[in-house]
Length: 92
Ligand SMILES: [Zn+2]
Image 1 (cartoon, protein in one colour):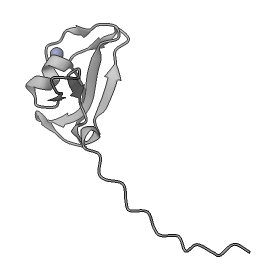
Image 2 (image 1 turned 90 degrees about the vertical axis):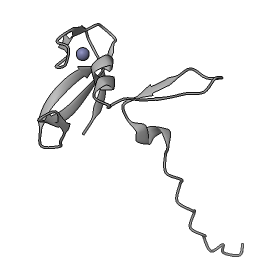
Image 3 (image 1 turned 135 degrees about the horizontal axis):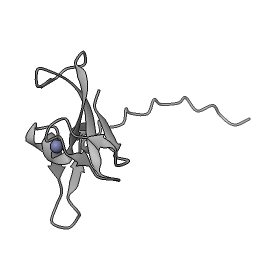
Image 4 (image 1 turned 180 degrees about the vertical axis):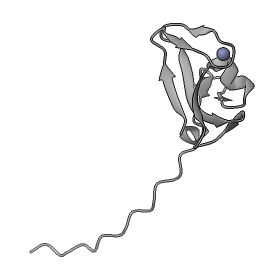
């Protein structure tokens, strides 16, 4: 499972080997042989390396700040289930 994290300044990127600076965003992702895999080893990647590997989505519009997320699904939440109709009891 992917985890988006904020560095406390002691995290090393497994891609470029740089230390991810304090408050920098990084991704923890299980990877096996360079491919996302739930059974793989947990790796930490800085934003640049996450992008390189295609783990980051950029979304945005001209009017808003660009959005960067490790979780594309967050940007397109499934529509809420239709509310079940509650049989309304007549007031007594
Ligand atoms: Zn990196």
